[in-house]
Image 1 (cartoon, helix red, strand yellow):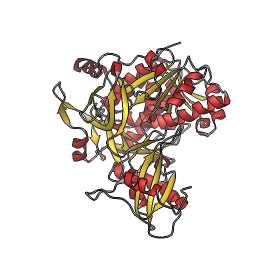
Image 2 (tube, rainbow, N blue to C red; image 1 turned 180 degrees about the vertical axis):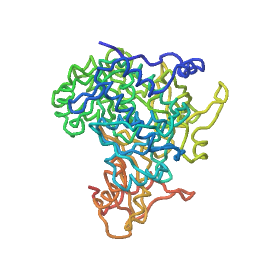
Image 3 (tube, one colour; image 1 turned 90 degrees about the horizontal axis):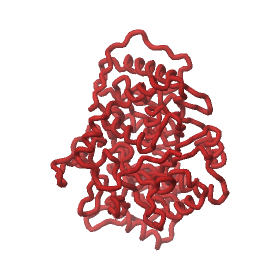
Image 4 (cartoon, rainbow, N blue to C red; image 1 turned 60 degrees about the vertical axis):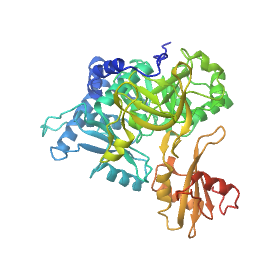
Length: 518
């Protein structure tokens, strides 16, 4: 049984020479895919509900898509940003690689999002058209290209939007070089080979899907798309894993918690093909981890990961169970580490406990927001010369052998089902409702359950909690919609006049609420 590439266990930060070596060996993700297709042309690259597409066939589809986008772009669009509507099928992988092969920037918009959210993202990205990604069963390439695509390693490979404290999404641009460096490290971390079959599970508007797709398709492995993965039924999910012979799963921690509970209570088992489960996005619950260890999954590696959109996919990882796991972790009861820095990553903890990240995987910054970029990515000397760092906002401590442990946030941002949510963005949408005079949104951790949002609303007209949640659902991703809406007489404020979220929530506990929030 193959193990997982070990994370660093010595120095907590990678030295400059090591980071430089990683940088020098990085090429381009498209080049790595083309190399994989050339080496394994007859292997299955994509499987959709059991139907295979070989690497040679996928490479030809990517070439044709690339030429079509190059022709569409011409020389007029200097930004080279292409917004595409994506859903869980192989066409999205063809368009992702095709756009990058055309020298353009991939800007995915999940087809499942409400129309209002799609329009907001289109405006934020500064594009004028949303392309669809329907699959042409008989693709043909245009005869002549309007220009030869130029791919520079400093050009953005993709732009993804994160939740913003100003009430609007923030577009993060990640360079081709940062992506290539990270993808190569993830192939090593996941120990991917052409024998692997990796499930595509993550939402396509967030960057976790890229850590499923790109390491797989540059390793000669198979990327599995299957409708049963999103059925909401764990028995169907397990059966699909068996039928598709899935070897690697990359799951939001909250989903993994629910999966463990199902396996534990129903005495169900994962298929023997599964060798690695990757989790991330939220704190690991110690009870669920113990239940996982009590299951018959000793052959399965459980890898906990950490990263931000601004630092490109994964920056820290630790194996919690399975072959090669850190032995001392078996005795931990309540404090589960988020990991150590990967070889291409440097990290630093400030005096107030905030985690800073540096290295070749850093994003370029936020589109059209130089001041915000400068603030979030300061150049600071932390002992090895002036270095560009990303301020994650996450508070951590470092334990033995370089392991980091989460200690919360320095702001109100929370993770809901693996997605970063800033309460201000939800509050901005709530207060746009004519019956809402003010709103506060807070994240609340439930015992043995996922983090959820609660909205405290000052009512100025007739409305119900269900109506307000429906209103938000028409404008925001599902992760942004509060589980509970509670009406309050007034919001609480700090001495400086800012809304006090914690005080508002605490005061609501001692009031009679006018809605049950369900």
